[in-house]
Length: 466
Image (cartoon, rainbow, N blue to C red; front, side, top):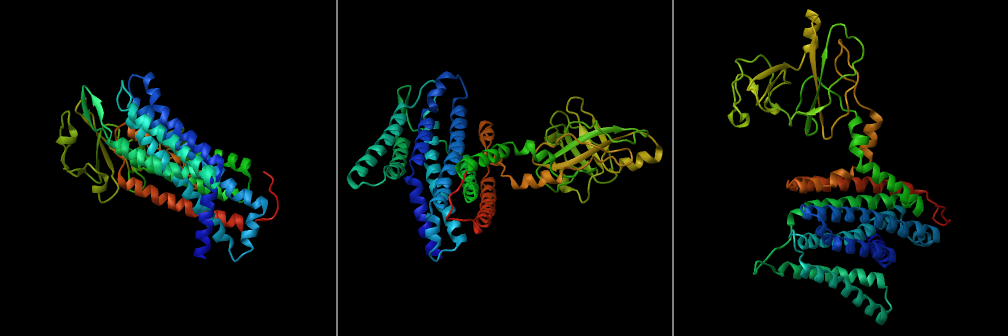
């Protein structure tokens, strides 16, 4: 079985590289990334950000495009022309066949991503200087591409081998060599030569782009077992667009309940919303405040019971002056039970405001007075405006379970897009890259299972209608 999987994967990899469309898309991506530094001549600042954003977008979109085209050529066409039937007539099981096809396509996409990966680092180096491009690096880069095509042409003429595959393999050798040469080429500034090197901080962001391309390649391969090129392209386009806006379209509607007390459990960001109730308001409430992140406002502290003393004055630097005391804690995780009081410190006036955040509805019903209701929710995305809630039951209605299922099933491509973090000079933690890799492995495994199910009873000898 493993021998069959290896042979089918190898043949799929080679056939994918032999496709002229693979070479054309790859060449278009490399050429675009290479000329992006020229665009910086028309901006006065943020030239590196322009190149990074454009190169990453090219790597993502062109990678998605080549994934759809390669999978359709590797599977849909073989099903239509009977090649798959010939292979399956031998002792090759359908799950092994389709999983081997996925591995071969992922390997070809890995070649695409590696070359665009190196091209992006070279393009950023070329555009490092605001008023001058590194022409030497640009010349070496484009010369490497031209040389690859010359070698591929000679190899094709002598051995009659596939020109597209020879060109891709030539670039796979020559572009890394050019990448190494460019690294050691000094840059002259003010009459002095110095080493510039590459922006290695881009590596985590580019690796995450590779993850997304692999996920899309697996999805396109699974769909190609049932659909032709046109239908596959349309479905993948919809999933791609929905995945880019997943947080807005689906994430803010997911089933994550609002609570009357802040909790350390759940996702990263703690959100809060607020409404003032009166005794006569027994109907649904639709005037909640816009959810705000509790990490972006005033200085906050929490208390799980009755405080043993007043809150101290902290001046203009509360983060430095604060010490946990009198039952108040800076971190929710330091509390043994859900907090009942929230202390808000105004750095302008230097005054504290103590707000009850649990059980305030019960207290209000005893004395008949109005009360303020705070609700909290842990989420990685900004929730929509809370809806519902009454005087007797102030908590808003929870989210939509259908949206929760769709949000879990549709790949969230925003998780792999780190251009904003790079623009803000925020380092991408290694743990995030590792978790992203685990997420992609789970997505690929799930989509691989979907591909096996779709292909299980597929008629492999009939012509397909796309």
